[in-house]
Image 1 (cartoon, helix red, strand yellow):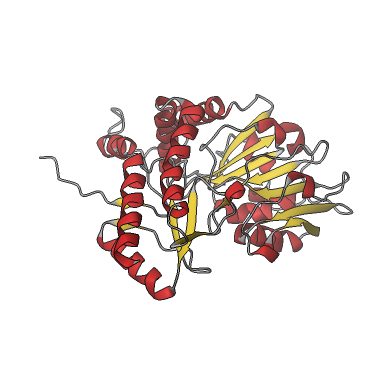
Image 2: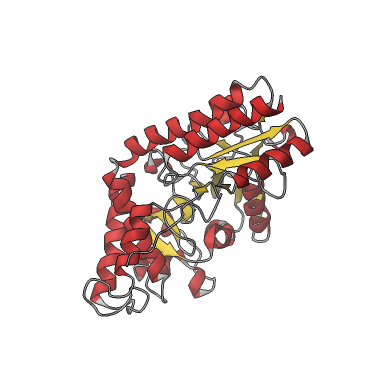
Length: 365
């Protein structure tokens, strides 16, 4: 007998919503994976059955993001937070500097970790304006001899997002794309290294995707612990140790789902429409709702705003929860409200929430 399920409007910032069709397929295959007599979680990572899953996920990601053959794709662990350390350990050579573009809490954390390993500086920062915006490309100040330039593509806490990426020439460009990878088309060739925790648009928590240019990989420091060497993971196809097999399986299924939607162009169009529903409610409220991000820096993934008072904000959040909207509280560090409209969040959820915003305003103005 099929169990009845209750699904709420999930706006959690991460781990975030997953496509219901992917969850249903995983449920169907959980006990006996494709006739193996074992769960995917029981398969050896050295088995042919798992190897096919692993390699197909790599192939699907390459196809969706148009990743050229001169890049390696790695499936690692430790989240983006471990990448904050791995990157300078591998690429911040003695006598070199690295520039960091400061646009929020996660770029701050990356900068703090990098300082432990070498000479780093702020190539640009919007901290003084409360991280309401993304720096203009022509405002970036970095040196052509730098080891790399680092940026965070989307800022989940403050709700800002890069619309265009700089062309940095000979300076390797590195991006933390944890919260907006797979949400819109972009040119991979601009980057020497891209990393992303999977738990926003790619799959469940526990997998970190790294896309790294092979010639940049060759420059990596080898005098570091083995498990922290990108080269070791590339040489072993991310199978140097036991990978998060179930997470990679789920990631592959999410990529198949994304392909079925029509790829990044179709996904981007859908994300534009979803975010517009919420931003329109903010903009039409005559100040009842105040968006955090400047209009030209607004994130399509994380829509952040405040109400006129803390008491009204609390009432709004309490009522939203009662109406079945989960994860709308802003990050604990800044408060306020946040709607995370990642790829798997359906348009119906954003429409329902925008209607709730209008109704709440009408009842409390």
